[in-house]
Length: 388
Image (cartoon, rainbow, N blue to C red; front, side, top):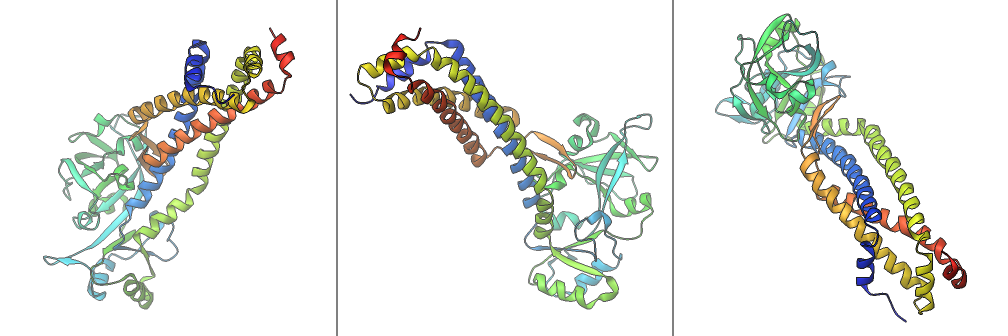
């Protein structure tokens, strides 16, 4: 005798609604966890990979290649670099050379507030909008120098741990014992800039009593990275190091590799717990169907046919749970902003993450059904028929 019909597996799903519900919800929970872990890792990777531009070079102080916050370079570097390196991008008389200060500052939403939070602050000039084309002002206007104004990223509220309405244009942030008015919001999707607070460069230097820069971002036109690196090597007095902007953020991604590994390990351990819970459920379910298995073998169905039919049951239930988890993930997790040490980023549930989650559900179905089914099928047919 051949294989059991597919309708047999479908009908068996309705024999125990409680068992079906437990299988669907259990698989949905495991798949949703895998989607959350994958979305976290994918969101971090995309945030750091898209932040850098292939045509941009960062000039930092020697020895500070891994942290812009520690870097200090002379204020004359932007002008010197643009004038000395032929081929730096230039439009309408403006060199694409952005002097910037990167700092982590403690802020408050009001003078009376007792809760303080650390913000990632970037001191900028209007040239920053040229070398960072990902940035788009979505509300309000840029901050004006001398007016004690700031502009916040779309995810800045998540990074600061405050309600989004507290950073609306017209509201205030407090640091340096002074109120700074939020002049606008900007969006830089899937970049670290999306969680930053931007302040006019001179205002930030005055507030922090700083007369140096953290870095200079150059956008190249005809020049190459080697041209910039050679110029830096010749100017020993400036103590500069040139890095492709994409390589800098790739280095940050490598730095956070242990965090990504920990996220996957946590998801795997919880999924393993879900697998063992599923095994217990399957053992109990198949123990009650031992006589059915024996009867089917008596009718001439081979054990491989029984394994295939019960695997179909498990895959159908798990597929329903996986689809439920995918829908919930897209509705609740995709684009969800999460706070992180480097700022904030949005979870990204793209096609590879969804496929990975569904693959985890399929694995759960296979490894959850085969061990208990194999144990039950090892019983002699006579003994199986006598089982109550």
